[in-house]
Image (tube, rainbow, N blue to C red; front, top):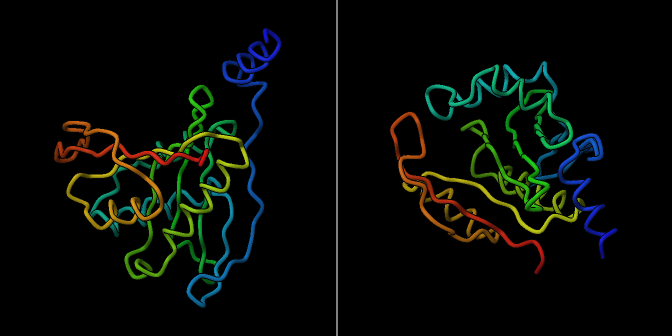
Length: 184
C-alpha cells in the first residue's frame, strides 16, 4: 500500500515525473467536412487571440497568457482545428494531477464555423484524452447567461456543481462550475 501511495505522490507532486502531454496530428471528418486537428504551437497564438476577438469583441486571454500555457507541456494541452491550413478553433486544457481532473481552460470556434459540431468534437477529443490519461473527471466554468454553451456541456455529460460569484473580470458575471464524471 505504501509503495502505491509513494508512486502516486511522486507522480502528482514532481513535474519531472509527469508525462509530457502529446497529441498526434489527425485528419477528421465533422459534418461531412474535412479538418486537421493538432497540438497548438507558439506561432499559432496570434490566431487564438484573433478567434477570441471575433467571438467576444476583445480577447479575454492575452498573447502572453497563451504563451505561458503552451510552455507547460506536463500539464497543459492545447489543440487547434484547421480548415484548409487556417485555424478556425481551439480548445485549451489543464491537467490537475492531484485531483485526476482535466480542466477545460478555454474553447473558441470562429463564429462562421459555430454550430457545425466542431466544439463538440474538440470536447469529446479532450474527454477521450482524459480517459487515456486515466483521469477521473473533466471540469470547466461557463458564464451563467451562456445558455447555449451550458446546454451543449450538459448534453456532453457535464453537470452543474456550484456558482462562482463575479467570476469573469470583464463584467463580473457569475460562472457555473461544471464537471463530467469519466469513471462511468
